Image (cartoon, rainbow, N blue to C red; front, side, top):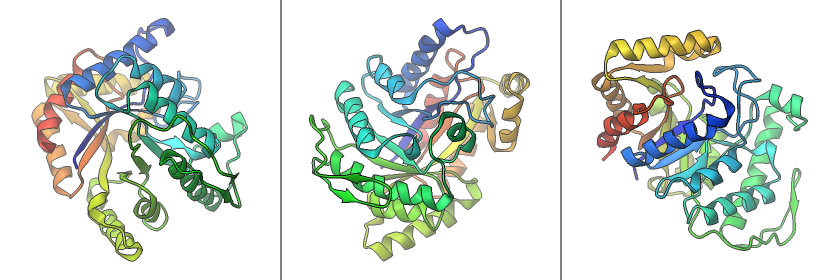
Length: 316
């Protein structure tokens, strides 16, 4: 199965006051839906990420925003990229994602990861713990959430979480796909093989074949059919009608958001032909599609539409 997802990651737009923030987000979601993107993602954070801005830049709570976007879209799946497992009790998360599925008419997806933004945790009082702690919590959470989403009544007396015959009524309207984000070859991709329907890789294009080999090995060891798992890769782009316009828009973004310069080398900048060629190369590495972050200029009317029209034909 192929996938083309659009991520709304930046809520800091030039000359857009707070009262116009949500309409600007809605416009991007609608452009994505109308131009060939199959999923709209938003980040699950409370502070802006250090590579995208400052902690006091605007950040809208994920599931409230997704539920609101459900009322302004009709076909795209709606998901976090990705839910920080550390922010919510897993039973609450199952109920929250199910509510999103109900209010969207069966369009929810659960994107989930272990959590990583330590400053956000420390500032807001969420337990952070060690790398191993977070992955232990994620694995227990997946057992609870997947069971509840599937209409089971899971019980778990775990090291991190405890539930007893956890009910989830009403049930989701459809099977909610579970996507795990990250590229760790030993832990993350093992959990993908064991628990997930989809994987969103965080890696450089040249590392994709190695990540896919690692996933294949985990699937073989666990007896999982690798063809059941859809694999996308996270990308960053700034596309405009001409190369010069794309460069100008990207440089303007970096000037107003200096922290974003850290992703300069990872960002695909250019006109539709240049951007399309780069994405074709990424697809040739073996993934099933992309998630596209256009933080630099996604708020500019027409930019998301042109991205979808450029990329959708590549994945069929």
